[in-house]
Image (cartoon, rainbow, N blue to C red; front, top):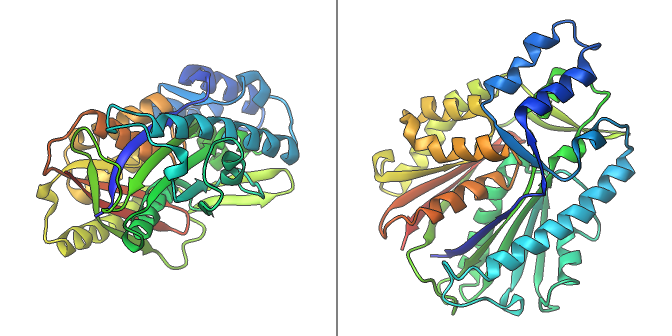
Length: 359
């Protein structure tokens, strides 16, 4: 089975406390919402403490056109992705030796918060010594499901080409999608939740020469699930001034009713039960999403503790967030033979699951 050899995470340098983000929202939206103080409770109730974004908070108070925001997306996505790749390939806490970029056979680049053609992976190839025959697979539009989905597609690639080494890069600059003139409740929720970040994972087939210094997660199986006629649950509305966030208040209810059967069927297909899964590597879409996970899967609060900590410290970065959670689990050094379940949900409405086993 394909092995996850290394995971790196990179955050931009500007850190915002949730109290400051709430004050920022009050100053911008107090004239637009009569019940602004009641609505601002979403900042406290989400239990986020800090977030990282790519621009100073004052920048977001000023109007910016789509071109300006997208140019910044390209600039920061390239810079942060380069850092993430270099850290991932040189992490000798898990790798037996540093990995040369020339050893990489394919790059899956995951993002939904900006547009670039040529895509960000092409720009990285011009900055790092990848081979010129490296395969490029940019994937756009999976939102919060993107990190887990990218790992699933890397699994597929490494099963087909077992000697290959693959990078999965998930890069999002969600803060640059902020719309200061959008007075919808979805936009206010987005301001309380979204942040920026990049993660990179190195995945290899079973015939790869890359080795690890300790047990690392092997991907045993994956599963994807799509909910028909659910385009309005979450996503972007694309308008002249950029990307406008779409959130349905039904998301926790959808998760509670839909996720449980999906997960249990997947685990049973692997001849296991949820009692066998010690590590729940869940994308923390928000506090209510994590509570819905716990309800749908009859989980104890402790099983979502790492996801909650990532949410508290980084907010929801969309696609990289699940990989931030995975890195936290890897750093805890689970023992060989322990199972993990990686899960993420996103626009479509869709879900992605991966069964992990530390070996």
